[in-house]
Each structure stands twice: as structure tokens, then as C-alpha cells.
Length: 207
Image 1: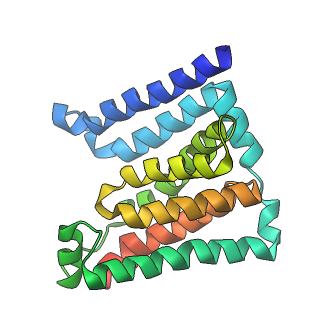
Image 2: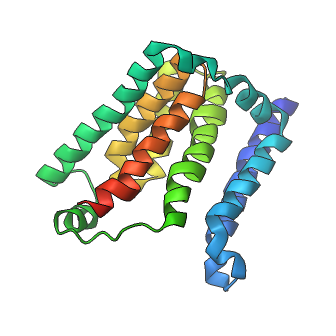
């Protein structure tokens, strides 16, 4: 029971902390320009401070899976299928935020600066994978069957990215399967980083 309450308090703390950090710019705080870095640091500290999340993450830090060819097959699959879906949605103008489609088709996206690229390809993939495919997924796996744990995790991940929810829903499912199959968070982080690099730089800049 103590572990359940501790895990609940962990998730609640993340929600409260995330809400506070996301609103820093509204209160004219000098930290408002460093929200991504501040959130990443706070997330890591908070996650390491709780036993259950810390143990889940520790068990998923496994680089040996990168020696297995099958791992790269799953990584390629987790990149290729969302890419195909994204292109279909853009070309047929469906299931995506209309502004996103309009900006893409008219080349209105601006090139991302170096700091934004770092956020997108390093910080965001690390904390999102540690949370969604790490703590959240494997906490749910203790309570329900894999299909439901993966589905719920992926839906929450999609809701976290509403502008292109259908793509992140598929990505969430594939990344969850990748982590579940390999029992390592490392391949999912690599896949997520590569995808974000494409979205933040190639997709926006070369559109």
C-alpha cells in the first residue's frame, strides 16, 4: 500500500511541478526562458527520489540490446510507419492540426535554433521515454495486461501532443512495443531522438 501511495504522490508531484514550470513565463520569471532545462532537471531529481520509479528506470538502462540486429529492425519500424502516416495525413489534409498542414505546405516553418534542436533531440526524448515508456508503462504492466498498458500509455502520449495526435499515438504504440520487447529504454530514446530531429529540423526547415 505504501508503494502505491508513493507512486501516486510521484505522479501528482509531476503534474503540479509541470503546471508550475509551464506557467513561469506568465509570471514574468527570469526562469521562463529555461523551462525545458528546468523541467528536465526537476523530472530527473524527482524520479530518482522515489524508489519505485527509480528501480523501474534502473532496470531499463540496458545497452546490450544495441548489439542485437533485431533491435535495429524495431527502431527502423518505429520510424518508418509514423513517417508514412505523417505523409498521408499531410497529403490528404486529415487527422492533423490544420495550421500544421498549412504551414508545412506553404513552407512557413522557421528553422529551429541550436537550443531548440538540443531540446528536441536530447532532453525531450530522454524524459518522455523515461516517463511514458519507463515509469508509466511498467507501472501499468503491474496492474493490467500488456495490450491495455501499452494502449493507455500511448493514448496519454498522444494527448500530450494534440497537434499531431494520430502520429504520436502510432509512435507511442511502437515505442512501447520496442521497450516491452527489448526490456530496455535505450532503443526507444534513440528512435525518439531521431524522429524529433526529423520533425524539428528536416521536416520544418526543408519543407
